[in-house]
Image (cartoon, rainbow, N blue to C red; front, side, top):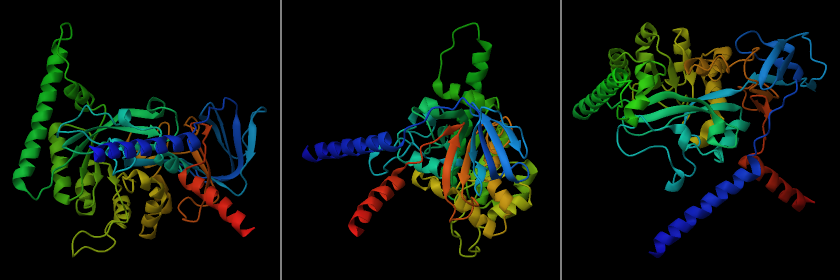
Length: 425
């Protein structure tokens, strides 16, 4: 009894610590309703040419003008960014941000549910806006993170979440975004067949439910939240994300999705280099996880995952780089893209893989992913090339809002710098 009470007391103290941090360094700012113009910076548009000594004007969260020698409204707040670079904010293609705070404290872990079939699970509802990991992701240039549940066969619905806001409702950028499916291992035939049969049965039930509901629009029909959640998937309004790394998983997942007539995005795709022609023929977008992974087989080259983005690019396959899924590791996203450049991926394509391409894959490229008129004013001000490890991100804007750049790392940096400066005096 004493140990249980102690456990709950420690858990409450940790939660209080997390909330306190949120109050200190994660206060969202209000939107600016006036024109703001950034001038004399290097504007990396991503979708077009890089503009030297360029100007970007925005108002009410939307970019109104981009280029050289453009007319700036008289009442605009002009900010000179000479010597700086302006990039579109990054998009992380798949993580558990906001769903896991401290992995060893189960009260702060809300990333999965019991059971194998949970299509009704919504990542945005479980999203913790006070997570200490969110400011770290935001201050390292990530404006939107695709947050995914995990576990079981059908984990639930992913959501695109902003990294600035007061509540999870404020921070929803697009939801539901996609349904997450974990493809079973191909090694155990019995378990694999059982899992695939369960998937087939689930989709059959969902289709029967959908047909019955359509046929009885004028009459009462009992609601089943699991099959209700799957209707947008069946109608191809949203895609499915299938987590599949091994080449046999990838091939089986593609064949299954085609038979079910579903829109598919493949995630993980460690062995995508073995099925490049298949991916190209079916025009399937893929999300590459950690580029830094080592080989999984003795005969594989050490650079298997490092050179994968370059191989996919050469084959004209749409891909994004997501890096790690752990909430604490999102800040390393540009490092994964930079490593791919070292192994043959053109720099412009590397930048697209963390900005424009994920926006295209998830259907939000009309708002995000590049610096263009009419898109959200979500961008990064940096002192150098975004892919260089020495580059510092000086300010992040999300939908025209200048974000608070204080996070846990900076908080401790300032704290101990002050402490040791006092000692040195």
